[in-house]
Amino acid sequence: MMISSITKVRVRYADTDQMKHVYYSKYLEYFEQGRSDLLRRVGLPYPDVESMGYFLPVIEAYVKYRQPARYDELLEVKTVLREIPAARIHIEYEVLRPRDTVLIADGYTVHGIVAAGTGKPVRAPRAFVEALTAAFKNDGKVQQTLQEV
Image 1 (cartoon, rainbow, N blue to C red):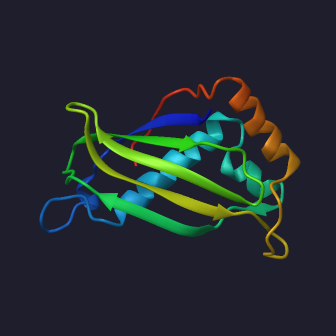
Image 2: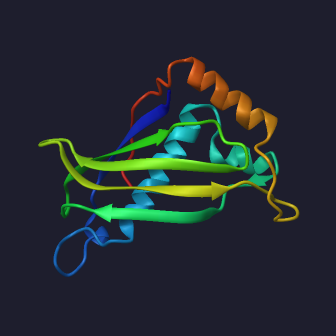
């Protein structure tokens, strides 16, 4: 079982390097957009998580670059959450070029859950777990969204 969403991203000129390829660090920004959209779609927009008194800092990130993407290409970021977190959240990503279904990059991020007031690690808050449990029960069907990063 899993929860997934797809975010469409149009490559901006500012995202490219001198070789006219998407600069390597931009993929982490695309991951972030996908992650934010997934959380929003399951009823946990990140501002709400913060207002509950929690932060989700990245404690690990990995990207495997497979093919270059270029300016003005439309990409899809598939974001997947496979389990309800206890103290850490592991989220997977695939960046695809939909016109020819080429896998551009894939990877993951791992996030801790910390209390905003103390910065100390905590278990996932009840509201967080409840929203994700409901999404998993809904067969992980999360609406697609169009975002231009």
